[in-house]
Length: 422
Image 1 (cartoon, rainbow, N blue to C red):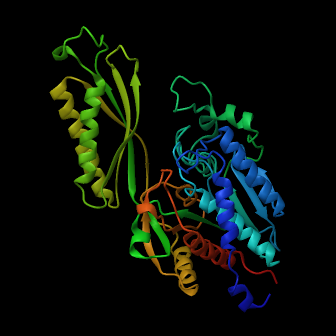
Image 2: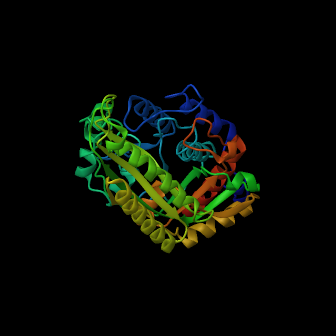
Image 3: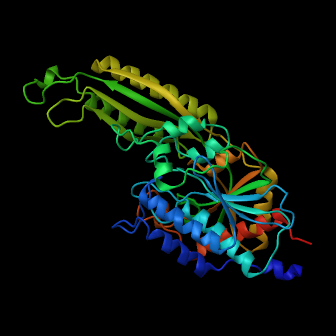
């Protein structure tokens, strides 16, 4: 195929949008979003549809032992390590149609575009759907990619049970078996030439500033904790107010302090307290124990340390003032990561050559690319998010033009790395 024709290749934006809207109907919510919790019936239906599309596109499909789906479009030299693209299809409970899905379906459209043009790459191109990126039903998040990268043991992942129902004994392995996605391919790293991930920004920066593409240079630093607040169980009626040790009241005070900490560290400060388990969680009993998931984030590593110190000092002060037992235990951290310099320059050059207005940007959220970054040259592309950049919300939105711009950059970056067959 002559070089000018290669340069003229573009994805079919209408077909990409139609695919997005079709996938969005699976687990559709009343507010216009999607609910496909990892390994739920809805997630299975989304995965089944994806696999059907990839079979129709002529890809070879394999599923590994943690449920990651790999779809391989053969190259002229199929012994070469693949150029990999990936993201996820699972959502949060009140998710939108774009988070994760945009990256997967941009990969689907990329492969369809290459097929339409009868374009043969030298290296194979592989599209992956990672299992349980969101961590909304089973924790930790980015589970599939972490197992693949050797950052989380397979058997430990299998044993994880539903965090949506603390009493549940349903495990990841149970649901992999039930949904038919307990694969046989080893869930471990293998040679990969490079990895690209496209995602919606999940924030307002690109759209409000008029940029069409974000080149993700790296990530904020994030540190995650479980705060355990202990009081005393008692009857909600007879117990006088001045004799109560209500762990939920103590938690409420801590949540306000966590919010204050994030706000006090400038525009890059972030602090969250998004998940709570209350015990015994019945209407007639004052709560005796609360477990609160919380985190602090910042673009500067040292500042995260300062924020953590303030969180721990604040918890100790509240414990002294209230008489509650309050413990803060770290359970995870990610970042700061720096994506591959050569890959980033390729994306910048590609966006510029295609005529898109782009800017460098950091990701504040975790993505599967964080795990892949330890294995091979990795880079991310952001598409603008509209509706004031809201995400993890049914109102999440990107325009067809937003998705097409990012997908075209993805297409030509992949072509540059996979090469044209002789």
